[in-house]
Image (cartoon, rainbow, N blue to C red):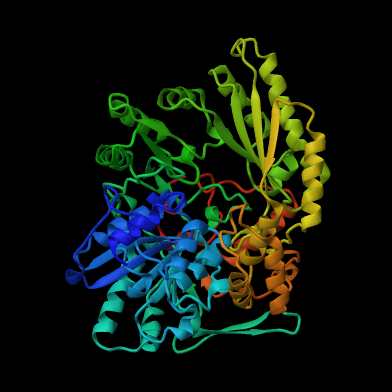
Length: 614
């Protein structure tokens, strides 16, 4: 299709900037002078994908190699997909506008379980065979990474190689192996056998799965020399790791339309529900000097007037106040604001508040996660109500009149008393505001409470726990509404049906591959978007495939059950997770990594917090 024809068709859709390409910072290369073409596919809209830091890093890193051309591909919204189908147009990459089937390697980042139908739909629109076994040559090798790769079994039939852990090193190693095997005429089967020898590469075709009569897994058996366990990869030295000096600057507004600077990876806290807190261990920090230099460079090269300091818990960065002081030296004069996501209530000091007020004045967000101290101890949040109240007091005293609090519903051992405790805590914060003699005069207060449904995840102490059923989740949501007695506290929550489906795929096995393929046939896509999610179609897909979704999310697992991800090693031992699960049921807490090492297994890397002096 000619560029003129494409431009004409883009005028008929809602946001043509999603598909046009040619943004500032995008990389255009001469096809005749590159050796490997890599399609980086984000299985969601342009606005979501262009906000993702991992894509920015790998896009720039791959394109820093002369022989690799990495291009971006996003899931087309329904209006443009309809145009594509009517005009027999395959899904294409933004940089060259070449169809997906022309690429050597097609890579997906898996950030959310409900993106799986988009993965299949993008392959289908790109005219790439869905099943790995049907792609018999090395052309169109499909790879995937990201947090959902820690249990990739629900889409194992469609992906040739999964990357476990962090991708900056392992991705390039696989690309070099691909070049070597392709140039020497090596078969795909032999390439996959060699790929399995690279640490961090999981090849699902090299593992046979057998099942017991009760539908649990009987055995996971490696073959053709594949390792019994595949260990994740991490980047050990973040100061000397690749980080882009510029980002592609979109023509249209995206979800997080700002520069992003990573300050550290991992988390010291050990909240028992939080998958990211376990699979990204151990904590490794960048120096304040590196963060400041990279942040200043990004803002100068992109023109962004806001930069976000990214991590799982930014206020746990040991050099935060020093860093903010250094950044304020240039951000003030350049009119750049700094945002600090992921603040914790137990280390939010008046001194930090003063710096936050200087860099960006907006509402403050914290995550107590549970409404009573007992349940906060169960989940190992290690935050007391006194700390929550003191933090809100500090914020109100500093001139803030709004706070947002995140909670979860359906946590293990939860009672109705714990749930009502959420709105009661909100009421106590409101009362405290009006009792403060130094509160902002003439202003009201708003406490926003957002409640998500708990989803048990692999590689957490709660991976063994059942998830609440749909009727129970809806009962609890109703109880929350009824327990709220003030308009100063506003309640919101996520759709419970999407959380139920997320729970199925979070801990699912390969038998779900057929269900996902069937759901795509029935028209499912963009399942994370409320306006397109169709629960009834999903239930029909399960029924058509003879698979019971309740088997995956509404039952408890015993400690000796073989789990679908038991052959994957994220360096958090089963013994540690089981010990933490027992402590949860005793409502007993565990100190964070900087207070005391718990021998979780991440010290095998001998890096970061694991070798700090405590």
